[in-house]
Length: 329
Image (cartoon, rainbow, N blue to C red; front, side, top):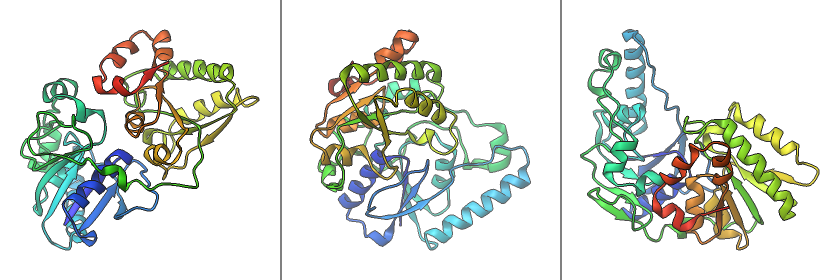
């Protein structure tokens, strides 16, 4: 069996291409989807999962959770060994699956810009998470000290030549775009893409909101009448950021119609289906992949940095490949 953890459309396309590259039988493949991920006409079985792992000192509660977790995983794979495909290993849920008795090994999937950083940069940016005494008491050796890219992986599946440089077992899936569904039902010209930097605490949301308001004023100057927008997975559900963004849109409703992109529609589908589309991003990795599909992508990150100078360091820290394909407004 082969289990793939899917967080976003980038990891979804990497997973599809990896499964096809390895010539896996569809009935042997399950995509475990998290963060509200949806796919249009999925090629393999999608199974939504909760990736929450209890953080508790109540050992009986944790042991009961772990027993149920292991039993459900064993049932999913029909008691057979499985290979685990993940974006990274600095994640408690990933470690519990990785240390399951039936897990025969693991591989990495390209999910975002971390794949374009050197191993040294990854270690610096995503420092090890030391093993907690609480986890040792509750989960034993199942949650060890976590590194972003644990050693011992079998393959590292990337979409472009620069992905996972420095990691052994690289497999570059050059023809992945042919697995993107072309959508004749789509006809978009301008797509605004949000990212998760404020949800992750990298930048204050108020700074992002100020940059967005400046961008909306630019839309007025450009004479735009309609813009589609794509939420980041962290903004799905009950995110407090959504109503603030919608309020900003409402203030410009007299001249600008704002239309949400359905959750199951990827930017790659839009990029390859709409020849005249342009994407507007801040630092979204999804915009990077849209640019690699051959469409213009511009960043309003400068507008954020003008109200929050610390944001310049965020822009400069992006891999150089990003700015080879994305242009600052």
